[in-house]
Picture (cartoon, rainbow, N blue to C red):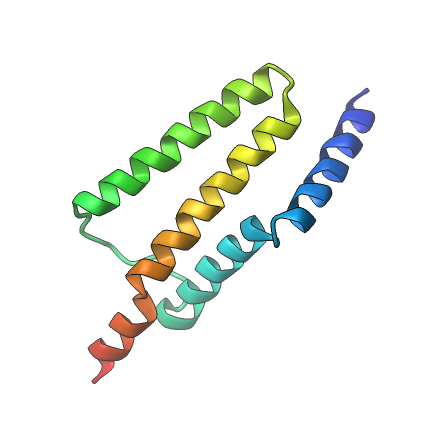
Length: 107
C-alpha cells in the first residue's frame, strides 16, 4: 500500500509542479544557490524585522494547513499548500533582492 500511495503522491506532485511552473523547485534551488554562492553554503546569522515575522507567520499557517490536509488524506489540497509556501518564499526573496545587498556590502 505504501508503494501505491507514494507513487500516487509523486505523480500528483509532478502534475501540480508542471501546472505551477515548478515553483517549489525554483524556490528551493534559488535559495540554496544563493546561500552557496554568497555565503559559502552556510546560512549567516540574521536580525528579523516585522516583515520577516509576518512572512514566517504566513508560511507557518500554510504548513499547519498542509499537515491537517495530509492527515485527512487530501493530497491534492495538501500539495497546493506546499506550492503556496514556495510562492510566499519566492515573492519575499524577489522583494528583498538580497543579491543587491551583497553587492553593496562588497563595494
